[in-house]
Image 1 (spheres, rainbow, N blue to C red):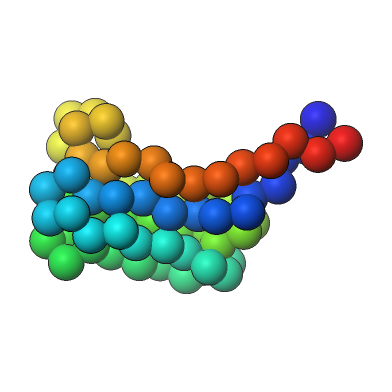
Image 2 (cartoon, one colour; image 1 turned 180 degrees about the vertical axis):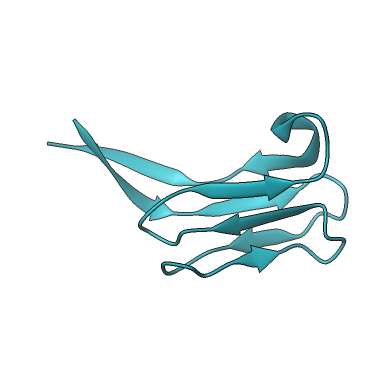
Amino acid sequence: MNKKILVNKIKCKKCGDVIESTYTHDYKQCSCGSCAVDGGHEYLRRSFNGSTPEECYEDLSIVKEVQ
């Protein structure tokens, strides 16, 4: 099964910013610089400052399984 990315979005746990990437190579960073999102509807890429993603951001993306 393939996956289709409907929403590529995260919420920074440090500053509370919700950031969304809406197109390929649409790199967005939160205001405190702790995390970033990229890829739009093509791929899910995260960047973060910390030891684990779970401590830095909450993933709000919506991905659908397609045949």
